[in-house]
Picture 1 (cartoon, rainbow, N blue to C red):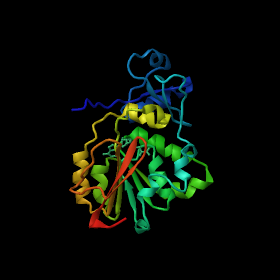
Picture 2: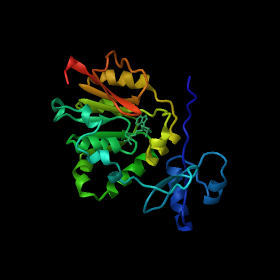
Picture 3: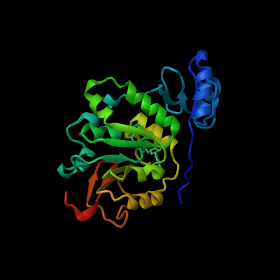
Picture 4: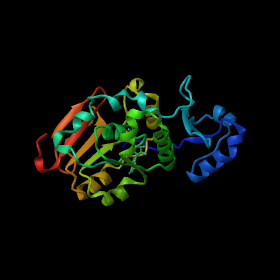
Length: 257
Ligand SMILES: C[S@@+](CC[C@H](N)C(=O)[O-])C[C@H]1O[C@@H](n2cnc3c(N)ncnc32)[C@H](O)[C@@H]1O
């Protein structure tokens, strides 16, 4: 049994003018406010949301030379790339289908999928993360991404509770948090989520929900060496492998890719 716990980031502020905003932000999201000084000397974890009315930024002070960051989607070359592992999970048969991303996080994958032309409903359960990501999407001024951002319907909630409302969506995407042996390769943004979220991912609840929703295709990202021989009684019809993870593709109706 894995020893999973959910770690919450602290909320702090970079200038005294922001204390009030930071207090409100922490209280709204059920997070703990900490002074910058106490954060520096904290012996426990050091992940922080720098709260300011203008911008929310994230930082992990446990990482040497780290700086506050927001998500700049242009840093993720795969989003705009013609071909990528995630893009390979989609075929001509999928054109016109709606996609639901059940674990949206920073919406990097949701944006990569919508860049292919799909309408994506992306659901994130953590309210602070929803607010942060929403701000990053709204602040993204890159022209090449505007249409793709507009095709994302970003929602805060538990996808397991909301999934029933989206019975017109034929493709489900699921990116569970998994431990990775070689984290050095991961970008700081992904590392931040990973260091934070060791919450147990309730795959059984997801399986049940997926079964009820007649999806035509389920794309499930998992650790490279995880055994994913079946999901909702299906075997993956295709597995697309990267260096550290793989996409398991389950197609219903035994459609051939
Ligand atoms: C590995 S991250 C996803 C990263 C994402 N693919 C991206 O491109 O940024 C998994 C995310 O799923 C969210 N999550 C886990 N269970 C969820 C649920 N039941 N409903 C909605 N979001 C969930 C977690 O809070 C976390 O942010």
